Image (cartoon, rainbow, N blue to C red):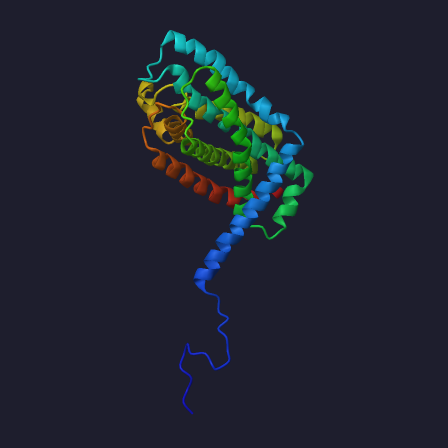
Length: 284
């Protein structure tokens, strides 16, 4: 009898060994599906308190109406061919996204832990990365309302907006990416501090350095050397740069939209990996 050669299946037998390619593709599909499920659950919370979106827009509106109007008249900050109000509009939109993301991610996580929701999710077969990305995506959806509010206010104030549909869709994309980055960063803090009081204090502490160590309200060229270095590793800088290039009619991006999106995406992936490792600590 001739011996069976290795790797050759007998007649009528089916090779049930999983294919590596299929395993990878199915894992990605499962991750996307469960991420969308978590995102949907988070977005549904807006039905209980939709006024939160309006309240969050008060602070950026004041920045545009007061800070932007005053510095436009003084002309103290050189912004090239852009009027200062146009220059700051993209920065204020990014600031609004930053504030919503920081005070939504970690704070909501701590509330869910106190209510026992986190324990139930951790006991489910949902991947930790899907939980993190779902919250990040939901935060991005929440921040889309800020785009329409800032656009409307900027239009009333005479800012020359780029109303091209493709450019507007690119603005929405960069807002979702930026919101995701800062939401996951906030979730990491929430995993570590575990109390609402500490989360509030740390959130207030880190938002101002993120904001002022970026190109949101003044060009990077005006900063001292050490602050320029911090600005270049600050994700908010690249979000503002992309928004300024696509949001304004005569806007210019220093780094390019592709590079800005790539940096934000890589930042989101790295922070998601870290947060996925820390996420089980919330239930401890």
